[in-house]
Image (cartoon, rainbow, N blue to C red; front, side):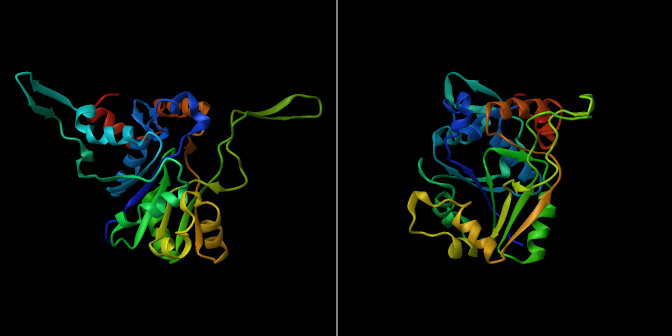
Length: 274
C-alpha cells in the first residue's frame, strides 16, 4: 500500500485553555517540554506514518516557525560569528524523514472546511488519516489501519471511553465508604477519540464544497456517513486523554512524568531539550 498521509487539525482557538492559548495555538502547548503536536506526530511516526498535512489557522505562523527552525530548536549547534551563514548542527533527528505540509486553512474555518482545503495535498492517496491537534493516547495505529482495510467501509473512527474527572465513592447505608476510586474511567459509553481513517471518496461524497467556513466534520458529514452504514468504530481501551482545559494540560504533564508517553521517551534521551 502507498504511503498514507495524516491530516492534523491545528487551527482552532482553544478558548477553554485560554491560560496557554492566549499566547500560542493549542497544538503548540507543551507536554514534557515538547508541543502536543510533536507527540501526536511521534505516535504516528512510530507506526511508520511519515507524511503529515497540518491544517493551520489561529496563530499558525508559530507552527510554521517551529518546523522551519526544527534543527535549531532540537539540536546542539556550532556557529562561526565571522561567517553567520555557516552553522554546524550536531546529532541527526529521527524526524528528518518526515514530510510536512503546512497549509493555512483560515482562522475561522470549521473542521470539515479545513479538511476540504487540504484535499489537493493528498495527491493520489487512496486513504488518509485524520486527527485533532489536542488529543493523545497509546493507540495501536497498525491495528487501526488493519481494521479499516479489513472492513472495507469508507470511514473508521477510534472510539474511547471518556476519562473520569471526579473521584467516585461507593457507600453503604450507614454512610461508610466501601470503595473509593480516584478519577475512574467511565465504564459505559463510547465517544469520538479522533484518530480517523477515511477512503479518499469521503471527501468527494460527504464534504459539501458550498458551505465555506461553516462545514463541521462532526455534524452532517459524519452523521450521514453513519446513516449510510459506512462508518466503523475501532474501540480503544487504553490510555487516551484530550487537552481541552488547563486541568487536562496539568494532568497530561503528570502522565508524561510517569512515562505514559512511550513514543517520546526515546526522543528525550536521544536528542534535544527535555
